[in-house]
Image 1 (cartoon, rainbow, N blue to C red):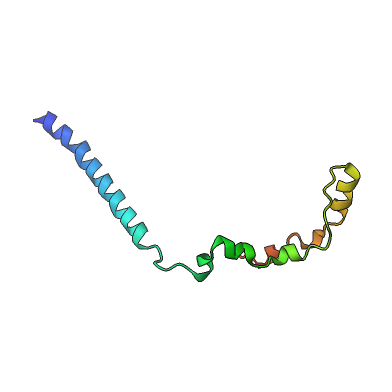
Image 2: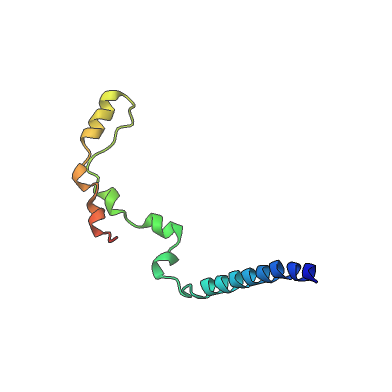
Length: 92
């Protein structure tokens, strides 16, 4: 009789754990919002066709040369003050 009771404990524990996982996953799936925002309804073509303000603000043409002098000239033309402009808008 002791052998029978020893086998039932792990089975009951496993069933309880499985039920908790099922209930938790149901809660997680049911708590997700039903609607999707309008911004995410844009297709890839629409996003690619829309203007990019960061790209438009670039004021120099980058050379295609791999010579050290050309790379240094391109590096000197960068606007360092605008690199973190968007960081001020983020809230953590």
